[in-house]
Image (tube, one colour):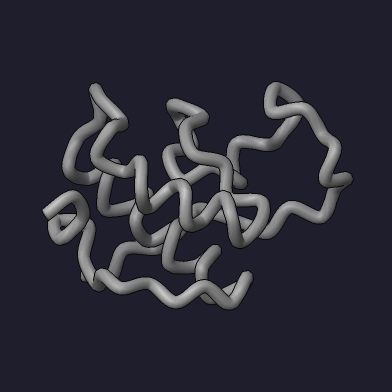
Length: 88
């Protein structure tokens, strides 16, 4: 079964405060962790992916699908194809 991302591009102002961002712009929506509002944030989300605590493997599956969707949208090339490869 293919995991469907919950991420959607943020079309608001780049100056929008994090607290005012919608849940669907975060890699981890429920935790509101790792916003994906530009290419730099996508790269940061990959770098910090294994630092997010208290989430299930299913939540990590969705978060990585969100990161992949945002990476495609912002033109970021990912060097990993699965979240299990991050941090190794």
